[in-house]
Length: 103
Image (cartoon, rainbow, N blue to C red; front, top):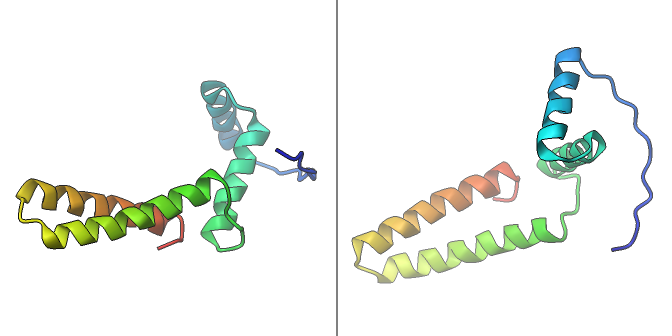
């Protein structure tokens, strides 16, 4: 992976949020800076300001491909269990894509 040039962006947080961020950092074994970069990536993606790539893009493409397959098989199957699983997958995939702003 090519090293990225990072730019310092000082932020101010309420004490409670700073404490919770510290707890999350310790629990997740990740730096606060890494967690904040993830939060900024999520925010930019949510508002359509980021170009998604890598594993994130792969997840979106896999969910969309899975939706196509689920639709195809749910139309041709008469098995209730399979129809139910296709429906569950469609609901889950659509919820994830909607939360990512990629529906």
